Image 1 (tube, rainbow, N blue to C red):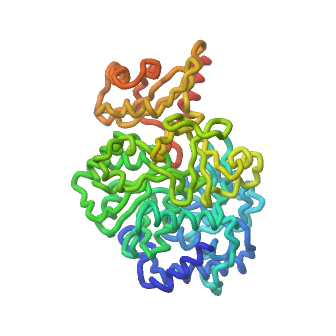
Image 2 (tube, rainbow, N blue to C red):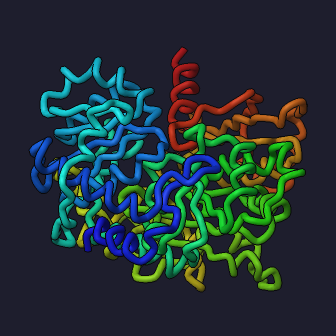
Image 3 (cartoon, rainbow, N blue to C red):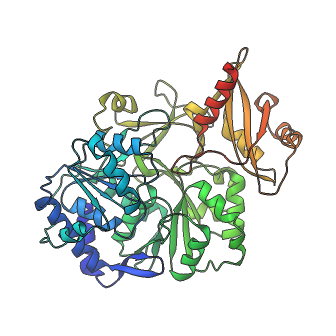
Length: 512
């Protein structure tokens, strides 16, 4: 059940195959990756004196050493705490302190900052830079066999983005990660040893989770030299590596299909783009299909049920003769294998088909709870069901359409208004690049609708055009009372638009 045991097995079977590549060059074979993970695991247990159950943080941007450190942590029977490299120093300090991490590996761009906050984290005994001589000494330790772990042992402590308060640590077990790994192969995409995953999205989150099924199949994990997402760099890597897959947030897909370099790019090696982390608007899906071909598949999940609640397979994108084809493309698909999904009211009763309620799920993918937060755990997991906080509707065939986060719903005059419905309409305008719809306090109606709209570069939009578009497609009471044209929308470190900031801006103006 230990993920590290999978790597050890693959290293025996596919030892000479590339396991990790950096840009266009192979960095580690599977034999090298497996050996180095076993040696580093030995050092974690002997040189650093860590014991099973201890937490080890990874404060690293995408880096070719990321996976061997991650698997060494599991190999030693420890729990990994991957931290997004773009966080603020105070957020780093909070996560390190809250998790009780005894050791932390850091890329050079973060090591200096972490040294400055180390005194704020009393449990942190070891801060190891990926370029120091200290880390190379650790690889001189004797290798150890993969630790034997119970399936429900903590494996990955994932901290939520914290947009509505302090981040909470979702306790992901070996059982959940094994479920996510095998479910990818069952529901999302098949993987051959010659394929690769290009990690342009953060390996501390979804892209790192999708390294696991690729390692399980002896495939290559390619880290861009930039350590992040650059469209032209990704297009170059596609031309170099066969069977290339990505995990992208919807905003990353949008950047790809709107980039001028896409027109002349060779996409022969592009196999799959898995998108998730938020719904992608139907207009963007159709445009991506037109420009990329049948390469898309969608997943819906949370940090609390990593990447594995519902999915929309490639076959749904090809079934253009189905009478509900567009509705299905606009959905998040249906329940993944081994996962139960329901849409319920506040009391946990199923709502009718097509009616909006909260999405809940149950299965081995669900986290073990929130780290040292029993109150939040009890609120989120009830009778084994994870309450996602996402609003959606299910059709008679089981396809789930996401409406909004429950906190994003607008209530105006006692009527529920779902921002995504309005955003879908605004994105039909050819000059709208992206948009966000939120509620503004109103003394009589409770809230009123405001749309923030980003035009495509060098394009101008008249708000009257947007208003006419809304009046042609949605009920008058849903139409925005104001359209604000802006140059950009603030996003968090995972590419999600921060509607909280937009609401705070409007609330502050109302108070003023």
